[in-house]
Length: 460
Ligand SMILES: [Fe+2]
Image 1: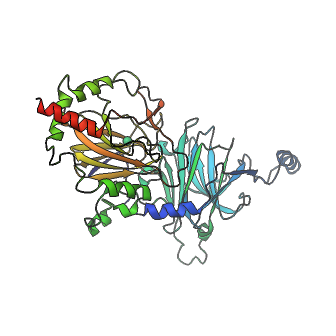
Image 2: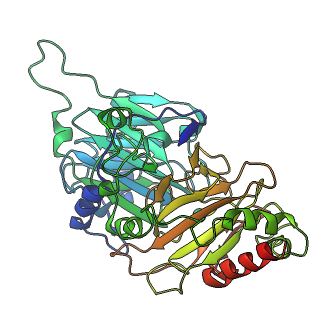
Image 3: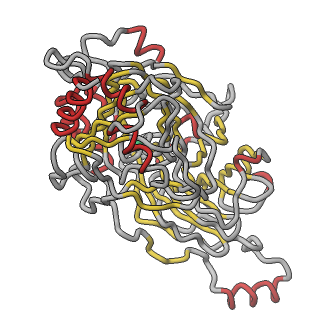
């Protein structure tokens, strides 16, 4: 596997997704996670009264209303919270030690603005509460655009991170390292962050998330995309964060990996060693099945017809009710062909390259406003990669080889055990970059396809 990052600096090392997933289930996951109890100390009328009487309000002017969510970090002092928000104006994510109004208490604030974004140590407007600020374009608020904003607290490493999209270090857009306790300083001014657990939102108006998620660990390192057998991973691999093993993935992925990762799952087998050659010939020859089927799919993903935005889906068995479409799909990628940018219905997936190479562009999230990938990985024959509901869910697959050199992959899908929705679609961006639903379908069943390729090969 080779990786090419786009203007990003991934951080090294590993964490166990399985372990983190178990921890996540310990925390409540409410359908709608707001108490809707503003914590401002004064009703608006009271504030006006006080302003008039005292001349200068003790309540900081324009302090946004603060609304506590029901999210609680299961381990105090660490965790990541993500909200998918369409902001109408500047907003804040506030992390605090308890659910009381935070205007005077030490807290941690991610203050996302249109001209400046900053981390604050108090939920006020004062310059001296700012820990660190940035005017970098990537870290600024994008009004009226739905994006996933995450805020990671890492007490162990005294690090705050803000990212957009999936909870990955490669998608961090702004980070602050809290200064160490100064020599001779008796009290650590940031000792309070070890007790932080509660999450609030504020803004004018208070943003209403369309999706939200709590992760029990901070964003420190990303899980590598390459999955290797347990007896192949080395200390050097772990040190360089080059690959992982199936033990680090969720149970759904383990089931899929156990089925297809073995040496017997190949395209060319003793009973038909020319299978891959027969497929390439069928793709390249007018009148043969692959050529004609691909031609008929040029308009499949909307917009103007694009003969290169096509691939073949050869299903292996029916939809069994635990995956979007068939759980096992042989995908055929002619040289130069690609998919649209798409997600996977929050399913887990294992992808194994059976023939050729596949290039995977990863995107922070599925959005008409997010059209730049952040990393591209190339996988070779025999390589196994994965995606999960929270990581690497949005991608575009490409066979960058020339015509006549097809790639074959086996894609395996399964909903995690805690998925009670079973969203049956892969959403994708069409030719006009609008989000559309793709119902996973079948161009042929595997046995029929293999039999047809044999016949075409024999008749050459
Ligand atoms: Fe995909």
